[in-house]
Figure 1 (cartoon, one colour):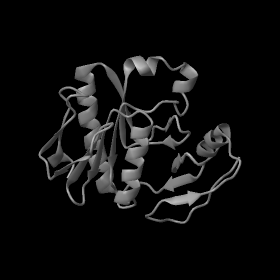
Figure 2: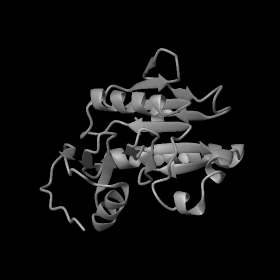
Figure 3: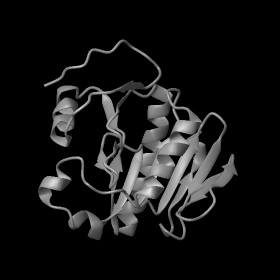
Figure 4: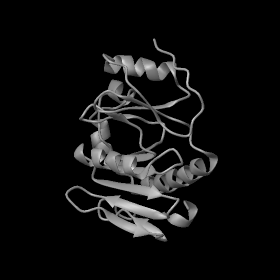
Length: 197
């Protein structure tokens, strides 16, 4: 089992561990629980430093709003940033917030649900932090779309910009919006952005 020693940094660290199987990756994550770890479709390991306090607070507000909506809506299940999903392309990703239709979630076995579930969320939010480049997050959002995402929000607090992703549509850019709506894919979902900025 691999234990990783990393010097403090504000940028993600990419590691290549050739020959790592999916089970090896799970064991690697279990041995390094304090780290946020993702895996690309090509097998590179991406280690992201913890979020700074202000980003963590904003992400908590996003999660709060998403959970409140999901409790009222009742058609899906919400996941926060520590949850990982194995996408159809083999990548394991951990969006800052995610939502999956209940019928899709319940189609998974209990063993799949208790791991990095082999499913692409229906909806994700990525919140740009100090360690993220806009380009890397845009690439990640496209990867979600390529793997079955129905709706995605990329939120850049620094510029107060929200990018909305939908399959087979141009990305919609909103500058300093008061609210962001999930309609029609997620009816009645609205995020109040003053709590996020």
